[in-house]
Length: 337
Image (cartoon, rainbow, N blue to C red; front, side, top):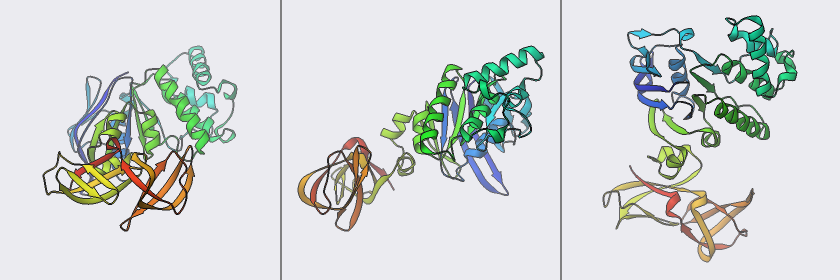
């Protein structure tokens, strides 16, 4: 396996920038998740790594080899990159076994058959080797696509929204199974998603994008606990937001103060507070507008001075109560505007 890196890569379509000087690294044998909304540049990065498009500026490197510059693009078939698409892209006229064997055509027949069955067994589908894609469930198709991508021993594999369209239970099961397979095979992986939960669950590193720009690249825990901007904080889960000014090292919100000593006194600042960072206790400061079950917690809508925020409360809060609020500093952030 090889690391994959982009250095100051730009790409535009009809004069509109899809990527603007983006740099990132997928470490060898690790999972890099590209997280961002539609139009953020995730799919463009995948196409550039795969060799399906050329860069306008910068370079793409796989291991020690530079595979893309503005003057040279190594052909896709020479890059040894596996791909799993959002719709799996299995060949409908081939069985599951034949799909996996497709990239093993240079092997002798006996070795190809043995390796195909070994990979199907690895993803739990050896018994479905003779089934056609239309006879497989969505989850089974996804596992066949993963086996097909990994069987030729690629230098890296690209996963493009591989769990979208699956029900939540199957989604979680396949995510865990895929992660186990990638870890066992020590596969360098670039995983594209717009789902923060998927990204946080699978990634060794996160690259968070918006409108073709890199907002932050970091381990998941660092990105979650120390987001570089309001957009990063929002990308990794729902937040409560507020705009105010720094006074005596804090931004005063209707629900409490948020530390802002790192910002200039008097500067305008955007505040982000995660729902789980809001602790509630009996009091009279804040009105409870709504309470809904949310797993082991209640999702509580709060109102203070016309502003409505959401909190995750471990203890039962009753509709119509008034409460006092305390903001945990680990989930409350202030950013310069």
